[in-house]
Amino acid sequence: MSAVASGETGLVRVCSVADVAPETALAVEVDGTDVAIVRTGDRFYAIADECSHAAVPLSEGDVEGCTLECYLHGSRFDLRTGEPLGLPATEPVPVYRCRVSGDDVLVDLGAAPDPDDTASTGAAPTTTSAAGTTPRTLSQE
Ligand code: FES
Image (cartoon, rainbow, N blue to C red; front, side):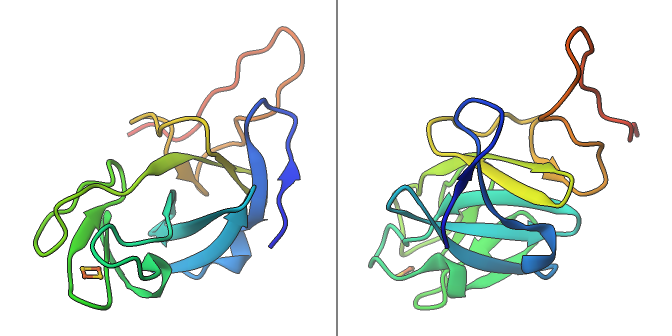
């Protein structure tokens, strides 16, 4: 899938929100890098689409909460940090900044995810704003 540059530095459109069913992952390519876009609940995450144990696509694994399980040997990776949560994998997988803007899912390969920057379909778009305004999230818990 081709990526289209967004208006914000580093973020590129990789797919639409509707392309990723809840609790699944979608394989995309961003500038030659294989990335798994993972949707869990109304949250989206971007993680390198290659297990650190034996280089199989993580996008073919199962999504559970904030983890993605490798289908081959069962290591689970934390979608927020890329860290393996169990053997046999011992090395982390790169994770990337991921945002939702309207119907678009955006990824920045050059930035790590911010703990408060996880993409959500329930939040107002935060990648575009008129000059002089501050993007904000409407949903507060
Ligand atoms: S290939 Fe992923 S855990 Fe072995």
